[in-house]
Image 1 (cartoon, rainbow, N blue to C red):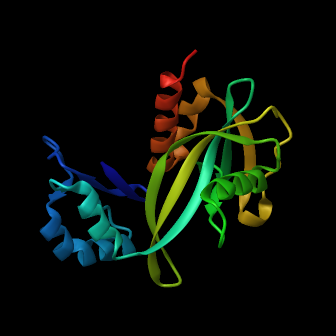
Image 2 (image 1 turned 30 degrees about the horizontal axis):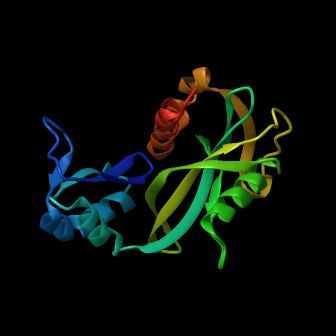
Length: 207
């Protein structure tokens, strides 16, 4: 399954038809016809929750993505030795540190650079790839799709986080995993989805 988010809205691409759903369920051809209308609804801040069912969801997702300019980015879920992770607070939402890839930069370097810049610590290393996320947004009157590579990262730092104020980050804080649920109401579904994949990855790791 591929998921594309826009704030609290989404497009799901799958080879299954969800049972008893209140979502709009489309096939590939109806998606292509209705996409301009759906994007216009997003422009008007109307709810758009769509499942696109097709035998080849990867190919259908590619058809969808061609309607947008692609931007690559990377970020991380950073753990310390106390089992806490870093959350940042930006634009009234809790988020994970991430940012855009620069020219001739590897995606792993992007992830490390952006995380270090946004939380103000250099003692960070990549442990493992988590997954990609996709979200769409409008910038300078152009719709883009951002593909973000997410990594599990480790640090020995347990304090001393400095939010990158110039990027609108008001806070960077350590959060215990058992307290994550307190932050979910002020978190976009995309970030919740990545945190769930991070937790799933941790369960698969040897003790």
